[in-house]
Image (cartoon, rainbow, N blue to C red; front, side, top):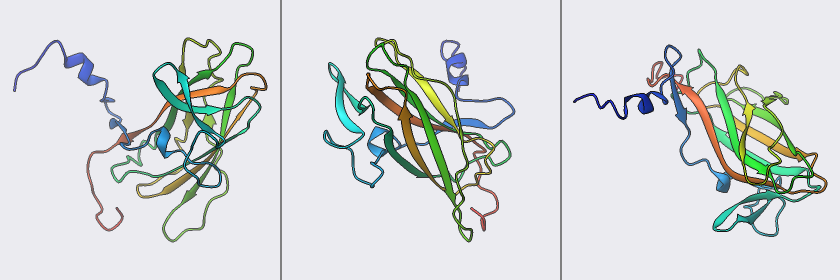
Length: 188
């Protein structure tokens, strides 16, 4: 195997030196979101599936709507508990330039043999970009909240501060640090 100088630095983006490896949970996307009642999103639910731009369908939180549904997933088996870093990233923006929408989340964790937690109150990074031509990432930072491999996580999502403009969501990803090994077979 030879070293390709053209791709070497690009490939390093996936590696966080000394702190495990940056990974994305595959299979989590906007289709994973559900209404608060657990329904699949459609053009008549809140939030709703919508054509956000020509040739691009996403999820939209209509102006004045606060309920953004829920996201549920399990912490991956290769999750690095020593670094405990987990972030949910939404690519989004305001549908107009009047409001600067914000997002909030309540996070609940269920672990085998343990009662459901109360809201673990993850940190939210910033308000959405109100430049309709430029989307940006908002991060829900669930790091340092004691997650372990196999934990089931439930996020109740809300949007606010957009009484005039809708909030558009183009994509979602869950980023975490992986130890890339499976040790302690009885616990994983």
